[in-house]
Length: 341
Image (tube, rainbow, N blue to C red; front, top):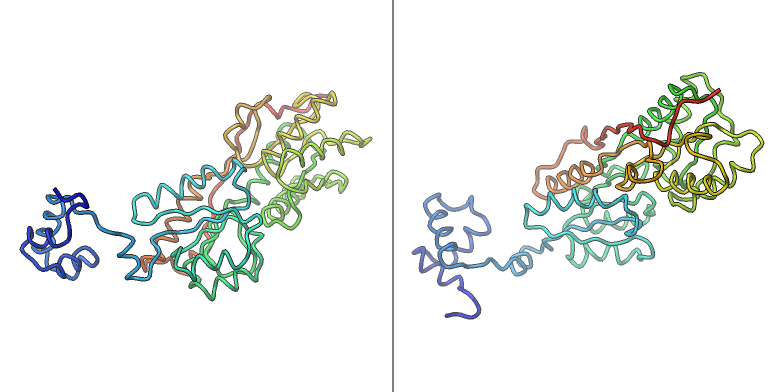
């Protein structure tokens, strides 16, 4: 018994063809006749021959892998997006490499392409400097890089994103329906594209419903974290005139806000209603269960991966499909209630 497994010569002998024909069939099946293809594939199955993907990719100068870059591996928000990406590439010959952009150097990112370690990339970090994108453009064609969830403004790269403005509008409309008129907003990082889009949606909705925007109630979150929410709560508590409802730029901000308000004797939703954004896994288990805007994170990942795989296979989308917008959904739970009195 061959301890190293069957060789390509054995497949050729079994199929009654040359080794070159076997190689051609496995790498470019459309170049051989159906009869030859069937004979080779039957021989592969009967001998148990395994294709050496690494060697095949080396000959083609391909990596057989795609790179996924995200800003924080510890953030639970990204779990379903990664699951969606993996579900697509699991049906292909491409592996998925995941890297955190926090602390990674520019030459390390572009090195994935220059060293043929990645055939394409999905970027979940809109804060990647333009210089890095320019460098990536020198290392890989534009159609080999796709933004997902976040994106960088003024770029021609394909992007898959949620309807952030629409989600903010849904949050405000829900609070207005409950009778709230004094509505605040805890932002994410000011420079972040998601923060900007959700603020635009918030302000447009407030204008539509004829509500004043109190600048004191537009609180910088700093980032999308629990600590940012707790800090915002401390600011609200110190105000003589407080909002009766708050729309938060993320679920983590909302949870940090609610927790800190509770410590300071302010009950949610009895004294203040709170809406988050994302619908992460713990949202419906939080106390109180969090009213939030659900992003279809799995779909974001699937669409981004499908877009990239289409480009890699030469079936890329047209420029009209350069931005794909994914619908969001308000999920009412226990952190919002009708305004009393």
